[in-house]
Image (cartoon, rainbow, N blue to C red; front, side, top):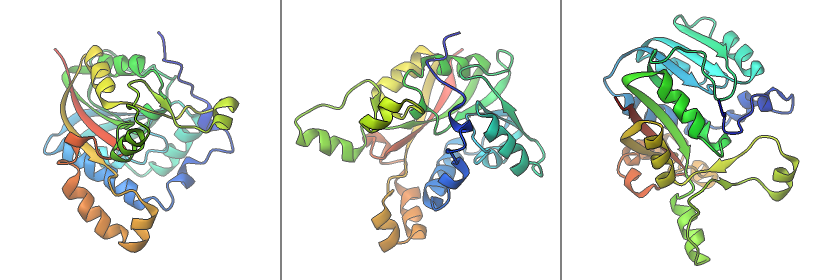
Length: 254
């Protein structure tokens, strides 16, 4: 199966520390938790799976809405960290996966989440099809997309009299891109919606997330106030694709 060019060893490098990355990002973490909870709503699931779950940051949130959570990540280092951090969390397990391949039977999962993974996938099609494969008919997926058409980007491109590219946009510096390593791309939401449909996933809802992500705002306004505003605007700003991150709730067709 084509994995879309994804790799599994990037975060095994000793220079990468994803746990440390989240230190000082309380606002972003809380904004994402709020989006997950809002999209899941009153639903409850049997088996929820987290694809590319890293060290299990969001697995405890998913467990609030599922009998069992299986967290998968292609980094052996991340899985080992998750096993340690989640050891006292009954009903949550961490598993190693090959990029683009979930070790699950067809139609075995009720909910699949994939958050902060699409920006590592220049070609997300194979992974989206794999998510659809393991979902039960009518099962749901919760997928976050790094948004190339966010409001600041729209202004930047308009100033240059250019349209926002419909394909993936590599946001690495030229030096980093030349070195290779972890891909970092933003996706156009219209293109992603088409890719969802091609994989058999239909959009049911969408939220704009991390809308107030700004170091200056964090310092001047405070994260608690920012988060209060964030929770109010996630839904209305979704129609504008306003924020740098879009969360989609999808249902598997059939």
